[in-house]
Length: 246
Image 1 (cartoon, rainbow, N blue to C red):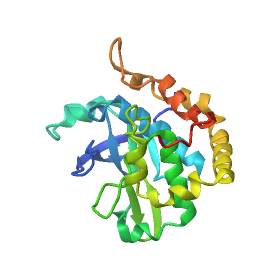
Image 2: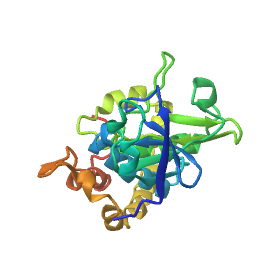
Image 3: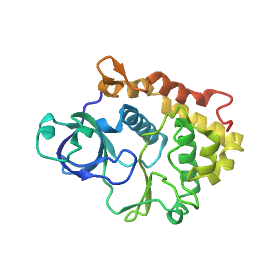
Image 4: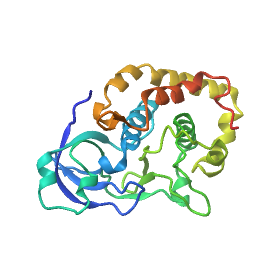
């Protein structure tokens, strides 16, 4: 199992946005993090850690993240009334990105054709439906770094979705307009599968890095996510019907 590299020293508050409403914390490295712990749920934590590392290996500009440790002493001090939803132990922490704004329709058009296509394919692969943006709004879970004039990818907590809806994905994904440039091009599809194969090579190491506690809700009560389900989802890329949107 990977060892947490940051110790949480201070809880500043809680985000008002996002389904899991992560806690805003300061680590012993002086950095500010958006932290997901007990209240986010085990599926969320495992998905964030696994999909985040896969996204890095796939070549996506994922915002820096780490495993962090919330010490028991932080839970006993005076703090937020819902501090129990952070919980002690190993948590998922995404480093704060200064000068960032949520991606909009305007900044979306500044994302390169290749990068937008890569994000679309990666989300299809990991069954992440939580990246929607249309003319009517949505939540793309992508940031635009105003200082660097670049995209940052965040939030994979709903990856490996057993209820993934392919049709809805194709309609609502922030880069859905690049669908045909992938799914109608056999050479491009084959190139993506080769890329996925490379990403899958260190999969056993990735499995070993997941905190063992995240597989359990309580003693003898398994979480509603399993390595078998994750592996099955990822291995779909070898199936003949992988690109089939039905």
